[in-house]
Image 1 (cartoon, one colour):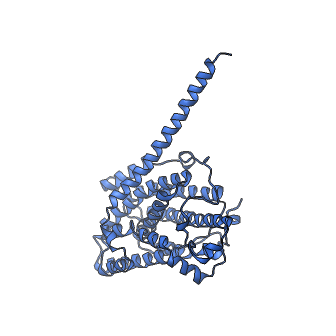
Image 2: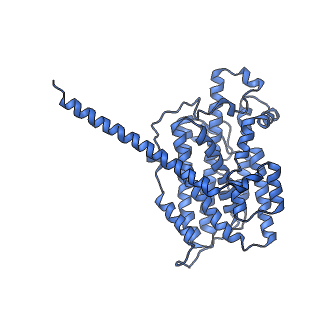
Image 3: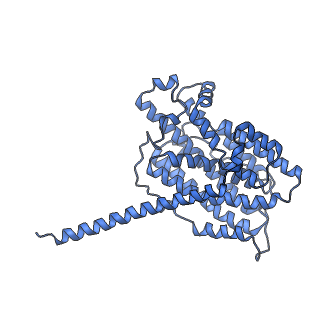
Length: 369
């Protein structure tokens, strides 16, 4: 089945072309590299995995309740429209929200794959190129996995959100080599990690939990890579150059906070855009979610040296300034631990089943006729 047949609305042209403005750079220095970055590259090689094998795709998913998240998480909950919905309607609404969320994850991962490939092309240092090559493979795997989940388990896709597409376009069009790092590794990946984490920790469905936990394990390395590379580079920039990048961060943060709300889903249920936006603004769950979106971004921005007064004031206005003191390393370590614990539990259960089957076969073989 063509992906176009699964879209809730026409996605436009099948190919989106973004002109490339930067330079491709090759380095003839093969002997030296930053130890921390090379260690991350080694970890990236060691941690490669196959989404077709590590994830248990045999697990059933109810399309009308793909994530098992509470009704309170739906921005329509508690409104006059919610009271008019039948149970079937509510199931379709849950399906649509899950489809919208995972569709944006899918589109973002493809964008991340292209940005990682751009970093391979444009980064001046070979160690950064090495790591970005492993990240390009990671992002391809993530896009493959989210695409498969949407096709096989939900059967519905949403086009890329206009504002996510705008941020991707701004990131890719910029000729400065560090901007794919800043736009993708810090903003979009930081946003994704927070969104993935909230769903990972609230879903009671094993298949999406596996997908989100394993993807987050990779993303933790990606954000660490962006922090290392940008922290080193931004120490060399002038105040004016730093302010330019802070303006980009401010604009991107407001864009993600105010526009990535799933209004398209409510529109598909016949709710006028203005009212859909109002419902989104009034949702307590969405307000909490929008704050948590910055739990990974704010400390990372501060860590890489973008912390001017205007940027700080923007975070005060958003109510997320205090997140700058969050321990990013601890958050990333937790992402690793969740994935490893999930693996251990799954493999222990599978081993237990195999042992039980062997014991049953032995017992059956020794039973008298």
